[in-house]
Amino acid sequence: MRTVVLLALIAILGLTGCQLPVKQPLHPAEPQPSDSIPLTDTPYQRKDWPHWIDADKNCRNTRQELLIATSRAPVQFKDTRQCTVKAGLWIGPYTGRTFTRASDVDIDHIVPLAHAHRHGASSWTRAQRRVFANDFENLLVVDDATNQAKSDKAPHEWLPPNRAFWCEYGRRWQRVKDKYRLRFSAAERYVLKQLADTCLQ
View 1 (cartoon, helix red, strand yellow):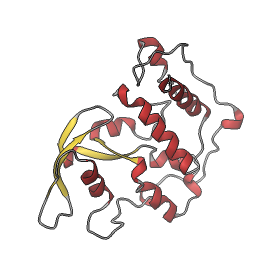
View 2: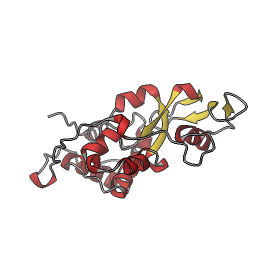
View 3: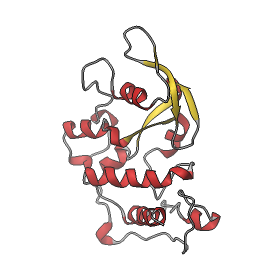
View 4: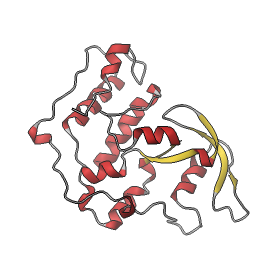
């Protein structure tokens, strides 16, 4: 099956995202009927999720606002209107790499839009999708390549290369899905539980 429980690497390598040992090997969990995700008849269309928006009408959309809020240094703008960020200092949590050019980073949805669509959001209104797509709690500044590698994968299919961020990533994923009452697959729940248990040790 397509699902690969990435936390099995912890037992093999003797590493965790929080630098803690795992007492027992982790194994993939087979989805149970009660946890299966019903298929949606509505195909995912990125255009149905309005982003990035200028919520406060100050000429800076969600991407620009997040770049400003997370930069470790004062940002530089493209022009005197100060609507678009050109440079700053960002540390990508997925890799730990540092970036200074805004053009080198993406804004990642921790819980991807396509994943949300498949797990309960296909019936949402456009307004609900707009809120989700621009929610700062579900957004991170990351590099282009890692964002593309993640795509719309869940934690049982992909975890950040930076293991030190695994605990925070698992917490953020869980929090966002609970906040919007999105469904979990059995394999997804299994990995999140194992990750949470490991991070509490």
